[in-house]
Length: 383
Image (cartoon, rainbow, N blue to C red):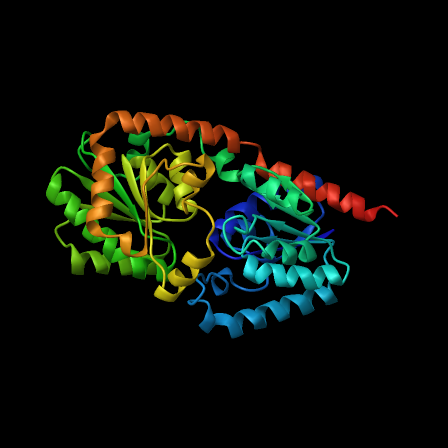
Protein backbone atom coordinates (compact mmCIF):
# COMPACT_ATOMS: atom_id res chain seq x y z
CA UNK A 1 0.00 0.00 0.00
CA UNK A 2 1.42 3.35 -1.10
CA UNK A 3 -0.26 6.48 0.30
CA UNK A 4 0.76 9.93 -0.88
CA UNK A 5 0.14 13.05 1.20
CA UNK A 6 1.01 16.71 0.61
CA UNK A 7 0.68 19.30 3.40
CA UNK A 8 1.30 22.96 2.64
CA UNK A 9 2.21 24.31 6.08
CA UNK A 10 2.71 23.41 9.74
CA UNK A 11 -1.01 23.33 10.55
CA UNK A 12 -1.40 20.76 7.77
CA UNK A 13 1.54 18.80 9.19
CA UNK A 14 -0.39 18.46 12.45
CA UNK A 15 -3.39 17.03 10.60
CA UNK A 16 -1.19 14.81 8.45
CA UNK A 17 0.72 13.29 11.35
CA UNK A 18 -2.49 12.26 13.09
CA UNK A 19 -3.91 10.88 9.85
CA UNK A 20 -0.79 8.83 9.08
CA UNK A 21 -0.88 7.36 12.59
CA UNK A 22 -4.53 6.34 12.11
CA UNK A 23 -3.87 4.93 8.62
CA UNK A 24 -0.94 2.87 9.94
CA UNK A 25 -3.35 1.10 12.30
CA UNK A 26 -5.38 -0.01 9.26
CA UNK A 27 -2.47 -0.57 6.87
CA UNK A 28 0.62 -1.54 8.95
CA UNK A 29 2.70 -2.24 5.84
CA UNK A 30 1.83 1.01 4.08
CA UNK A 31 4.51 3.40 2.91
CA UNK A 32 3.91 7.14 2.89
CA UNK A 33 5.46 9.73 0.59
CA UNK A 34 4.93 13.38 -0.29
CA UNK A 35 5.49 16.69 1.48
CA UNK A 36 5.15 17.27 5.20
CA UNK A 37 6.78 18.70 8.27
CA UNK A 38 8.38 17.14 11.34
CA UNK A 39 5.18 15.50 12.59
CA UNK A 40 4.50 13.65 9.35
CA UNK A 41 8.16 12.73 8.90
CA UNK A 42 8.14 11.40 12.47
CA UNK A 43 5.25 9.12 11.50
CA UNK A 44 7.25 7.70 8.59
CA UNK A 45 6.59 10.05 5.65
CA UNK A 46 9.29 10.04 2.98
CA UNK A 47 9.33 13.75 2.23
CA UNK A 48 10.16 14.65 -1.36
CA UNK A 49 10.34 18.46 -0.96
CA UNK A 50 10.84 20.58 2.21
CA UNK A 51 7.49 21.84 3.48
CA UNK A 52 8.84 25.39 3.82
CA UNK A 53 8.91 25.72 0.02
CA UNK A 54 5.11 25.52 -0.07
CA UNK A 55 4.35 27.73 2.97
CA UNK A 56 3.45 30.88 1.03
CA UNK A 57 0.18 32.76 1.48
CA UNK A 58 -1.73 35.78 0.17
CA UNK A 59 -3.06 36.49 -3.31
CA UNK A 60 -0.31 38.93 -4.20
CA UNK A 61 2.47 37.53 -2.02
CA UNK A 62 2.39 34.15 -3.77
CA UNK A 63 3.04 35.60 -7.24
CA UNK A 64 6.81 35.74 -6.99
CA UNK A 65 6.88 32.11 -5.83
CA UNK A 66 4.68 30.78 -8.64
CA UNK A 67 7.49 29.43 -10.88
CA UNK A 68 8.91 27.33 -8.05
CA UNK A 69 5.46 26.14 -6.95
CA UNK A 70 4.58 25.07 -10.50
CA UNK A 71 7.91 23.27 -10.77
CA UNK A 72 7.30 21.36 -7.51
CA UNK A 73 3.80 20.40 -8.64
CA UNK A 74 5.13 19.07 -11.98
CA UNK A 75 7.77 17.05 -10.13
CA UNK A 76 5.15 15.50 -7.86
CA UNK A 77 2.89 14.69 -10.79
CA UNK A 78 5.70 12.92 -12.64
CA UNK A 79 6.72 11.10 -9.45
CA UNK A 80 3.22 9.77 -8.89
CA UNK A 81 2.64 8.84 -12.50
CA UNK A 82 5.84 6.77 -12.32
CA UNK A 83 5.12 5.37 -8.84
CA UNK A 84 1.31 5.58 -8.50
CA UNK A 85 -0.07 5.70 -4.96
CA UNK A 86 -3.22 3.82 -4.03
CA UNK A 87 -4.62 7.18 -2.90
CA UNK A 88 -3.42 10.79 -2.94
CA UNK A 89 -4.40 13.02 0.02
CA UNK A 90 -3.98 16.77 -0.31
CA UNK A 91 -3.97 18.41 3.10
CA UNK A 92 -5.21 22.00 2.89
CA UNK A 93 -3.10 24.21 0.48
CA UNK A 94 -5.96 24.14 -2.07
CA UNK A 95 -4.32 26.37 -4.68
CA UNK A 96 -1.43 23.91 -4.84
CA UNK A 97 -3.15 20.59 -4.16
CA UNK A 98 -6.38 20.81 -6.15
CA UNK A 99 -4.61 21.19 -9.48
CA UNK A 100 -2.41 18.20 -8.69
CA UNK A 101 -5.40 16.20 -7.48
CA UNK A 102 -7.31 16.91 -10.69
CA UNK A 103 -4.49 15.62 -12.88
CA UNK A 104 -3.87 12.54 -10.75
CA UNK A 105 -7.57 11.72 -10.62
CA UNK A 106 -7.79 12.00 -14.40
CA UNK A 107 -5.02 9.40 -14.48
CA UNK A 108 -7.02 6.97 -12.36
CA UNK A 109 -5.56 7.69 -8.90
CA UNK A 110 -8.18 8.19 -6.16
CA UNK A 111 -7.89 11.62 -4.55
CA UNK A 112 -8.92 13.00 -1.17
CA UNK A 113 -8.78 16.60 0.00
CA UNK A 114 -8.47 17.05 3.78
CA UNK A 115 -9.65 20.51 4.99
CA UNK A 116 -12.18 22.32 2.88
CA UNK A 117 -11.13 25.49 1.08
CA UNK A 118 -13.26 28.45 2.16
CA UNK A 119 -15.56 28.17 -0.85
CA UNK A 120 -18.50 28.88 1.45
CA UNK A 121 -16.87 32.24 2.26
CA UNK A 122 -15.54 33.47 -1.07
CA UNK A 123 -15.20 32.36 -4.69
CA UNK A 124 -17.98 29.74 -4.32
CA UNK A 125 -17.67 28.81 -8.00
CA UNK A 126 -14.49 26.92 -7.06
CA UNK A 127 -16.73 24.03 -5.98
CA UNK A 128 -16.93 23.02 -9.65
CA UNK A 129 -13.15 22.71 -9.79
CA UNK A 130 -13.20 20.76 -6.53
CA UNK A 131 -15.80 18.34 -7.91
CA UNK A 132 -13.48 17.56 -10.83
CA UNK A 133 -10.46 17.16 -8.57
CA UNK A 134 -11.55 14.97 -5.66
CA UNK A 135 -13.21 11.66 -4.98
CA UNK A 136 -13.76 12.65 -1.35
CA UNK A 137 -13.72 15.91 0.64
CA UNK A 138 -12.99 15.67 4.38
CA UNK A 139 -14.25 18.69 6.32
CA UNK A 140 -13.23 19.87 9.78
CA UNK A 141 -16.15 22.20 10.44
CA UNK A 142 -19.78 21.09 10.70
CA UNK A 143 -21.34 23.66 8.37
CA UNK A 144 -19.01 22.78 5.49
CA UNK A 145 -20.41 19.31 4.77
CA UNK A 146 -23.88 20.67 3.93
CA UNK A 147 -22.32 22.99 1.33
CA UNK A 148 -20.66 20.06 -0.48
CA UNK A 149 -23.73 17.84 -0.24
CA UNK A 150 -25.74 20.64 -1.89
CA UNK A 151 -23.26 20.67 -4.78
CA UNK A 152 -23.02 16.90 -5.18
CA UNK A 153 -19.42 16.50 -3.95
CA UNK A 154 -18.75 13.34 -1.88
CA UNK A 155 -18.00 14.59 1.64
CA UNK A 156 -17.40 13.40 5.18
CA UNK A 157 -17.34 15.72 8.21
CA UNK A 158 -14.66 14.34 10.53
CA UNK A 159 -14.37 17.04 13.21
CA UNK A 160 -11.15 18.81 14.11
CA UNK A 161 -8.06 16.94 15.40
CA UNK A 162 -7.16 19.88 17.64
CA UNK A 163 -10.48 19.47 19.44
CA UNK A 164 -9.49 15.87 20.19
CA UNK A 165 -5.97 16.79 21.22
CA UNK A 166 -6.68 19.75 23.52
CA UNK A 167 -8.40 18.89 26.85
CA UNK A 168 -11.75 20.48 27.65
CA UNK A 169 -10.05 22.27 30.54
CA UNK A 170 -6.58 23.83 30.53
CA UNK A 171 -4.54 24.82 33.57
CA UNK A 172 -3.20 28.38 33.37
CA UNK A 173 -0.74 28.07 36.26
CA UNK A 174 0.55 24.70 35.06
CA UNK A 175 1.26 26.23 31.63
CA UNK A 176 3.16 29.09 33.26
CA UNK A 177 5.15 26.56 35.23
CA UNK A 178 6.01 24.60 32.07
CA UNK A 179 7.27 27.77 30.44
CA UNK A 180 9.28 28.63 33.57
CA UNK A 181 7.78 32.12 33.48
CA UNK A 182 8.87 34.04 36.57
CA UNK A 183 5.99 36.51 36.56
CA UNK A 184 4.07 37.20 39.81
CA UNK A 185 1.32 34.61 40.24
CA UNK A 186 -1.36 37.29 40.33
CA UNK A 187 -0.05 39.22 37.30
CA UNK A 188 -2.44 39.17 34.33
CA UNK A 189 -0.71 37.85 31.21
CA UNK A 190 -1.46 38.74 27.58
CA UNK A 191 -0.18 36.40 24.85
CA UNK A 192 0.90 38.00 21.58
CA UNK A 193 0.82 35.77 18.47
CA UNK A 194 1.63 37.80 15.35
CA UNK A 195 1.86 34.69 13.15
CA UNK A 196 4.07 31.75 12.32
CA UNK A 197 5.35 32.96 8.94
CA UNK A 198 7.93 35.64 8.25
CA UNK A 199 5.48 37.65 6.15
CA UNK A 200 2.85 37.67 8.89
CA UNK A 201 5.37 38.72 11.52
CA UNK A 202 6.56 41.47 9.20
CA UNK A 203 3.02 42.88 9.00
CA UNK A 204 1.83 42.18 12.54
CA UNK A 205 4.87 41.98 14.82
CA UNK A 206 5.49 45.70 15.35
CA UNK A 207 1.75 46.38 15.64
CA UNK A 208 1.35 43.78 18.41
CA UNK A 209 4.40 45.03 20.30
CA UNK A 210 3.17 48.63 20.12
CA UNK A 211 -0.26 47.47 21.29
CA UNK A 212 1.42 45.74 24.24
CA UNK A 213 3.30 48.96 25.04
CA UNK A 214 -0.02 50.86 24.97
CA UNK A 215 -1.59 48.25 27.27
CA UNK A 216 1.35 48.39 29.64
CA UNK A 217 0.87 52.14 29.99
CA UNK A 218 -2.78 51.55 30.99
CA UNK A 219 -2.03 48.59 33.28
CA UNK A 220 1.60 48.55 34.49
CA UNK A 221 1.11 45.16 36.17
CA UNK A 222 0.44 43.41 32.85
CA UNK A 223 2.98 40.88 31.59
CA UNK A 224 3.37 39.58 28.02
CA UNK A 225 4.40 36.35 26.31
CA UNK A 226 5.19 35.88 22.63
CA UNK A 227 6.03 32.53 20.99
CA UNK A 228 8.40 32.25 18.03
CA UNK A 229 7.60 29.35 15.70
CA UNK A 230 11.17 28.99 14.38
CA UNK A 231 14.69 29.91 15.40
CA UNK A 232 14.76 32.57 12.69
CA UNK A 233 11.50 34.11 13.93
CA UNK A 234 12.89 34.09 17.47
CA UNK A 235 15.81 36.22 16.29
CA UNK A 236 13.50 38.55 14.36
CA UNK A 237 11.03 39.02 17.23
CA UNK A 238 13.77 39.51 19.83
CA UNK A 239 15.43 42.14 17.65
CA UNK A 240 12.10 43.82 16.99
CA UNK A 241 11.34 44.04 20.69
CA UNK A 242 14.78 45.49 21.43
CA UNK A 243 14.27 48.09 18.72
CA UNK A 244 10.61 49.06 19.35
CA UNK A 245 9.72 48.26 22.97
CA UNK A 246 12.89 47.60 24.99
CA UNK A 247 11.25 48.28 28.37
CA UNK A 248 8.20 46.07 27.77
CA UNK A 249 7.83 43.21 30.33
CA UNK A 250 7.78 40.61 27.56
CA UNK A 251 9.23 37.12 27.29
CA UNK A 252 9.81 35.74 23.80
CA UNK A 253 9.47 31.94 23.94
CA UNK A 254 10.98 29.47 21.49
CA UNK A 255 8.02 27.54 20.08
CA UNK A 256 5.36 26.48 22.61
CA UNK A 257 2.57 28.61 21.08
CA UNK A 258 -0.15 26.50 22.67
CA UNK A 259 1.47 26.64 26.10
CA UNK A 260 1.85 30.41 25.75
CA UNK A 261 -1.88 30.78 25.02
CA UNK A 262 -2.76 28.44 27.89
CA UNK A 263 -0.63 30.55 30.24
CA UNK A 264 -2.40 33.77 29.26
CA UNK A 265 -5.53 35.49 30.49
CA UNK A 266 -6.20 37.09 27.08
CA UNK A 267 -4.70 36.37 23.66
CA UNK A 268 -4.01 38.88 20.88
CA UNK A 269 -3.43 36.94 17.70
CA UNK A 270 -3.24 36.98 13.92
CA UNK A 271 -6.19 35.20 12.32
CA UNK A 272 -5.66 31.54 11.48
CA UNK A 273 -5.44 28.21 13.26
CA UNK A 274 -4.22 30.00 16.40
CA UNK A 275 -7.72 31.45 16.85
CA UNK A 276 -9.16 27.94 16.92
CA UNK A 277 -6.51 26.83 19.42
CA UNK A 278 -7.23 29.80 21.68
CA UNK A 279 -10.94 28.94 21.51
CA UNK A 280 -10.27 25.31 22.43
CA UNK A 281 -8.08 26.50 25.32
CA UNK A 282 -11.04 28.72 26.43
CA UNK A 283 -8.99 31.91 26.29
CA UNK A 284 -10.74 35.21 25.43
CA UNK A 285 -9.05 36.68 22.39
CA UNK A 286 -8.77 39.60 20.01
CA UNK A 287 -8.14 38.69 16.37
CA UNK A 288 -6.42 40.93 13.83
CA UNK A 289 -5.10 40.55 10.32
CA UNK A 290 -3.29 42.61 7.74
CA UNK A 291 -2.38 41.62 4.18
CA UNK A 292 -0.94 43.41 1.16
CA UNK A 293 -3.23 46.29 0.09
CA UNK A 294 -4.13 44.66 -3.23
CA UNK A 295 -4.93 41.37 -1.47
CA UNK A 296 -7.24 43.26 0.89
CA UNK A 297 -8.94 45.06 -2.01
CA UNK A 298 -9.59 41.78 -3.82
CA UNK A 299 -10.76 39.99 -0.66
CA UNK A 300 -13.30 42.68 0.19
CA UNK A 301 -14.93 42.21 -3.21
CA UNK A 302 -15.06 38.43 -3.09
CA UNK A 303 -15.71 37.51 0.56
CA UNK A 304 -19.34 36.63 1.28
CA UNK A 305 -19.29 36.00 5.06
CA UNK A 306 -19.55 38.46 7.93
CA UNK A 307 -16.57 37.18 9.94
CA UNK A 308 -13.05 35.91 9.29
CA UNK A 309 -12.04 34.34 12.62
CA UNK A 310 -12.97 30.70 13.20
CA UNK A 311 -14.71 31.14 16.58
CA UNK A 312 -17.09 33.67 15.08
CA UNK A 313 -17.65 31.58 11.95
CA UNK A 314 -18.44 28.49 14.02
CA UNK A 315 -20.81 30.37 16.29
CA UNK A 316 -22.45 32.37 13.51
CA UNK A 317 -22.09 35.48 15.64
CA UNK A 318 -19.37 37.68 17.11
CA UNK A 319 -17.89 35.95 20.12
CA UNK A 320 -14.55 37.68 19.84
CA UNK A 321 -13.56 41.08 18.41
CA UNK A 322 -11.85 40.96 15.02
CA UNK A 323 -10.07 43.75 13.14
CA UNK A 324 -8.99 43.65 9.50
CA UNK A 325 -6.46 45.80 7.66
CA UNK A 326 -6.73 49.51 8.55
CA UNK A 327 -9.07 48.72 11.48
CA UNK A 328 -6.19 46.83 13.12
CA UNK A 329 -4.75 49.77 15.06
CA UNK A 330 -3.00 49.98 18.41
CA UNK A 331 -5.98 51.74 20.01
CA UNK A 332 -8.59 49.32 18.65
CA UNK A 333 -6.64 46.21 19.59
CA UNK A 334 -5.58 47.54 22.98
CA UNK A 335 -9.09 48.67 23.91
CA UNK A 336 -10.54 45.28 22.96
CA UNK A 337 -7.94 43.46 25.08
CA UNK A 338 -8.70 45.75 28.03
CA UNK A 339 -12.41 45.00 27.80
CA UNK A 340 -11.69 41.31 28.26
CA UNK A 341 -9.32 41.98 31.16
CA UNK A 342 -11.79 44.26 32.92
CA UNK A 343 -15.05 42.34 32.43
CA UNK A 344 -15.15 39.04 34.33
CA UNK A 345 -18.76 38.36 33.31
CA UNK A 346 -17.89 38.68 29.62
CA UNK A 347 -14.99 36.27 30.09
CA UNK A 348 -17.22 33.67 31.78
CA UNK A 349 -19.83 33.97 29.04
CA UNK A 350 -17.38 33.52 26.17
CA UNK A 351 -15.64 30.60 27.92
CA UNK A 352 -19.00 28.79 28.11
CA UNK A 353 -19.58 29.44 24.39
CA UNK A 354 -16.10 28.16 23.56
CA UNK A 355 -16.68 24.98 25.56
CA UNK A 356 -19.89 24.20 23.66
CA UNK A 357 -18.08 24.66 20.34
CA UNK A 358 -15.22 22.45 21.54
CA UNK A 359 -17.65 19.60 22.28
CA UNK A 360 -19.21 19.93 18.80
CA UNK A 361 -15.82 19.60 17.11
CA UNK A 362 -14.63 16.61 19.18
CA UNK A 363 -15.21 13.60 16.90
CA UNK A 364 -11.90 11.63 16.91
CA UNK A 365 -11.06 13.29 13.59
CA UNK A 366 -7.98 11.32 12.57
CA UNK A 367 -9.77 8.00 13.00
CA UNK A 368 -12.87 9.33 11.23
CA UNK A 369 -10.73 10.52 8.32
CA UNK A 370 -8.84 7.22 8.11
CA UNK A 371 -12.14 5.28 8.11
CA UNK A 372 -13.55 7.46 5.29
CA UNK A 373 -10.37 6.97 3.22
CA UNK A 374 -10.45 3.21 3.84
CA UNK A 375 -14.09 3.10 2.70
CA UNK A 376 -13.14 4.97 -0.49
CA UNK A 377 -10.32 2.52 -1.20
CA UNK A 378 -12.62 -0.44 -0.60
CA UNK A 379 -15.19 0.95 -3.04
CA UNK A 380 -12.50 1.57 -5.64
CA UNK A 381 -11.15 -1.99 -5.26
CA UNK A 382 -14.50 -3.58 -6.08
CA UNK A 383 -15.16 -4.54 -9.71
